Image (cartoon, rainbow, N blue to C red):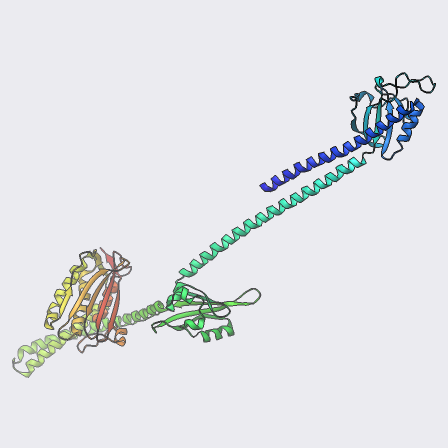
Length: 557
């Protein structure tokens, strides 16, 4: 806009100067013509020493030239002494009083409006006839230069007005052109600004969309019409075991993991796939359950632009489903076990009392005495099973207090030391003084640690060691307590049923030890991770929150 204003000002100045120059040029031309006529009139008058009648004749003949409106001679008082229109002779000029005499040899001009229209009028002093000369015996004297006679020439102003009109048209055209250029420049700048703004907004939107897509917890993948991967986010790349840069540009059929041929066939038939559960084969041949949604991308004209695929990892969902099913089973078993345990305990007390009574009646060396002892031993074992069943089935509210995990592990190690020494197994634990206090029910957690130690000891033959460690995890959110043995390890089938009540691989086990451990850890708001390989041993890792109170079944003091 500033440049347009400057350009308009410059052109306006140039136009005004050009108009003034053109006006001056045309005016000078008209003045020169008037001077020529006046000089011709003076010359003719001098050469003929004319009378007034002859002067009138010369004026009338001279005024016949084209473009001359009138030609007249007036004395110093403004009285017309010669005129191309004889009717004006002897009259006084209408503007005689407002016209001062011009200097000698100078022509003055003006634009006048007369009854016949506008006229370009030029006048000059007339020095043609001597003062003493008499006119043709008529007794009338000619005007002399001393009388300041003046010649008035009226010329047609049309050339001047046409020039002015032409200049005005040119100026208007140039002004319109400048205005149009300025408006066009303004519109261009406006469009350029809008384009830059739209382009910036588009780039920002693309960056935002790319960041959103990249950060999505679900896998997102798009392909072009040739089935080459155009875009993939981190979640999808991890599922296929590749980086985003590796995936970009690869054909769908080369990335593997899914039956892309079948997926493409279904898309061609129905255009969409909604929440279809499939197995994705990972880079380590691991099977990952995913929910697949896919759709073909069409523009407004119906042209195929590519396909979009959404992959949602169902591992956690499956895990939660299994956990929910397990909890339902455990709840049902717990209610059943609690009812049965209460019904069994009373007869057991009677049986044990009767066996104790009979033990005192029979000789110590007799078979009856041995039978009574066996009866008492089995009743005690059955009572322990019932007590464990009641502990497992009874809903318990954990009362937590801040405790040192090193102290709790040391207590469990001391309680298991006798069993470990009997099999020449070493319990290895070095307290970690850098660990902060954590919310614990020390008695119940000691029981959980003791069950893990006894299971580890019982799984090994004579000799070996059990390692206990306690560290804070990498995110500084949980305490990881690990119990690792060098026993025979477990198969995948055993691992899948490890915390199921009454599942045991030991001939004399109740199958409730690990179920109780699981219950205690969950009561502390923690998790259990088990890793085991046949022939390499087993490792239990208990993950407890640091300073966080579990939401259900927990009272923190």
